[in-house]
Image (cartoon, rainbow, N blue to C red; front, top):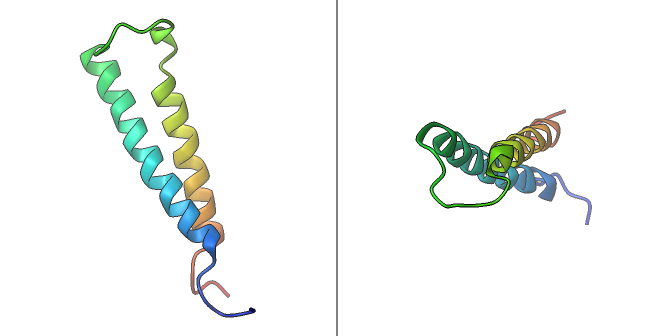
Length: 70
């Protein structure tokens, strides 16, 4: 079907953006407050890296595939 509906990539971008913001927020919270659990390699701050990556990728998809774009 060829339609003028909203592409699935827009919704994937929204999900990536939501998950990215949540993970990034937790990573920043954990960096400020301190580690909540004793985990090896905690100094790498992986929630900040992954949250930032997911947020950037989600923003890219949302902007590229936004509805109403000509």
